[in-house]
Amino acid sequence: MKHKHKNFSDSLWLPLLLFTATATLAQSVWTNAAGRAFTARLETLTDTHATFVMADGVTNVLSLSALDAACQTTARRVRQLPEIPDILRATFDQCSRDLRRVRFLHEDARLDNAAYADARRKLLAGFRVMFDKHDLPAESYPALERRLLNASNLPTEESGSKKNP
Image 1 (cartoon, rainbow, N blue to C red):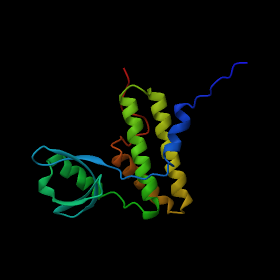
Image 2 (spheres, rainbow, N blue to C red; image 1 turned 90 degrees about the vertical axis):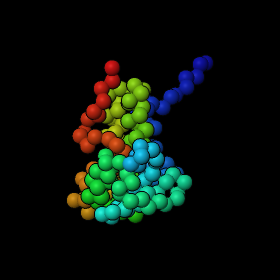
Image 3 (spheres, rainbow, N blue to C red; image 1 turned 180 degrees about the vertical axis):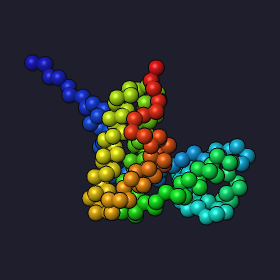
């Protein structure tokens, strides 16, 4: 009697990534005025300074003028987005990482357009479930979703922007 091994499809494991026990910071790549890139999460921003949390947990405060022009614009745009409630921080960070992972799989042609759109939809739905679980004001969700997509470096429209060859 032969036993068939059951494989989990991508559509089953992707939403589970959202709920993994480890929560790490949602990191972005930033470039300083000299053209050197670094990876960090923008923690706070004033009119003149930005506070970044590096992957190792070290906090650095930089003058905005120390960032290149594009990163200064990005930092100012992020500043206009809503604060992430503490109760949702771990979920937000994990979902952001998972969305980036799915985007990289799509860009690497390991996920086709339909699978990419489906995975993205499921991850956002999982984030919405956690949002609703904490009884946060419903009117704040669209802005939080925009911030999540921005933190994940994803377009805000519903379908993926990259077409696989």
